[in-house]
Length: 111
Length: 115
Image (cartoon, rainbow over all chains, first blue to last red):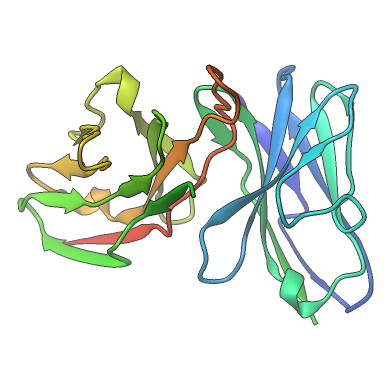
């Protein structure tokens, strides 16, 4: 199993600002995944972060809006840039292959 | 198009009653199928995988390729089963390959088991 620490757990931000979410895993993992859950919606994969290469983004998500860093095999960050109220969501990081482990999530509210 | 559908947003049963959470998918290939569960104030966690053919907490799920369904079933529901349940297939992105971490989540079904 993997233990994932994600922070902040929640934040309230102003429109136009950026927030960086951190995800720390207690073991080395090849891939880390970032998901978004908008209010009343299901989870949607934003991108896959591989150590040593650029993240792979899913359709509808771009690097300029959601830059990701993956400096080592236990850590990743997701930045939500130039935020608008539509970015208000829960953001989750996860790791694993056949079985995914999830962080506790970051609840973001943009005013 | 690859799609997963959980037709019931809410499902209520009484303790001891059978429960079935429906999941249908649309995909021309052979997906890997999972059920994830989120109990109140807990993290999302894996409940079961179809290739394991296992029973977890009394739940089972059978892949029906003809109907493209992967319904989750339990013969006798318990109050502690109350949670949000997500059906989540992984659709192969490469020929012969599987992208395990790239799950497509259904809308989720909130199961409430009444005493």
